Image (cartoon, rainbow, N blue to C red; front, side, top):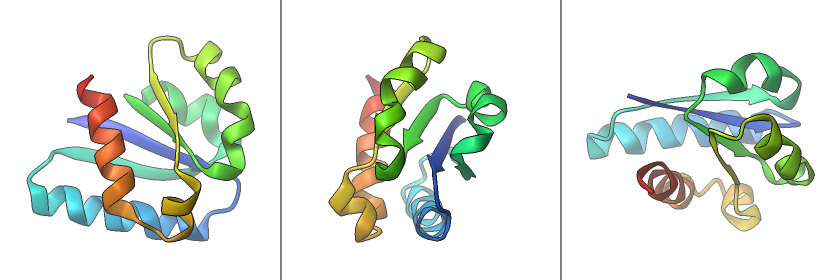
Length: 100
């Protein structure tokens, strides 16, 4: 089972998004462990993730996260999909990256 960590500065939108992503993955029979974390927990939680997803507010830290975790897959949420809580679109992007 792949583990995804969604890291953002705030929290409300991220929690809603993660819950919707879990539901869709479950409906698709796609085994994922998806959790939301504040960016300040990246050092602790990021090392256990197969995929690190950054919320749009944390996009400026993409290069730093990629350097810190060179063996991890890292992506930034599409801003429009994030603001619309489009879990399906973000999950599809995450799955494509995990499978690449």
